[in-house]
Image (cartoon, rainbow, N blue to C red; front, side, top):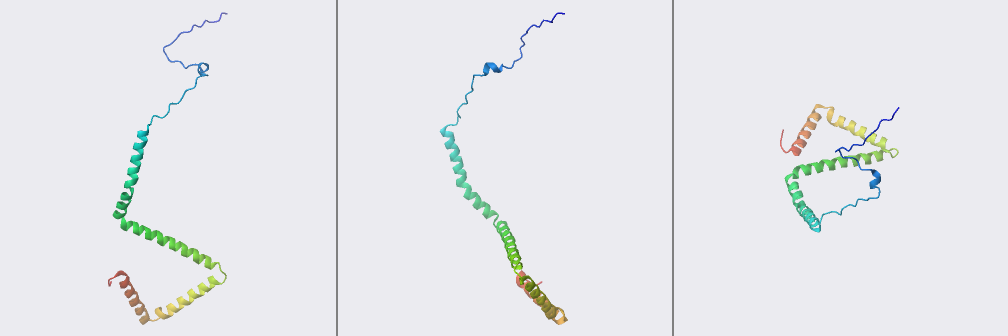
Length: 142
């Protein structure tokens, strides 16, 4: 048996260069091409933006003043309720305070029922007081 003979042919395709031939070469990185003028230009743009920023915020606040104030009040109310609940929870941890609060609440409820809800005349009095309070809050009689 004879071994087949191979002949080398060069094709027009690009070949991958041999790793061994590039082993000693180091590619140097080029320094950045931004000059001092470009940095000054960026600095002027940033300072111009920061200079107009208070005007933007002032205009935004003037345009949306009512919703921003309402949102602030809602957030303040939520925080106040959370603090109040935390204080009441800490008071309930003190011995005998929670049962005392319960007795005060039961006593006030019993007094309210006796004072306003048992008789028809006192129910009418309660209704007139609620109507008066409602007109004071709303500002008109309904």
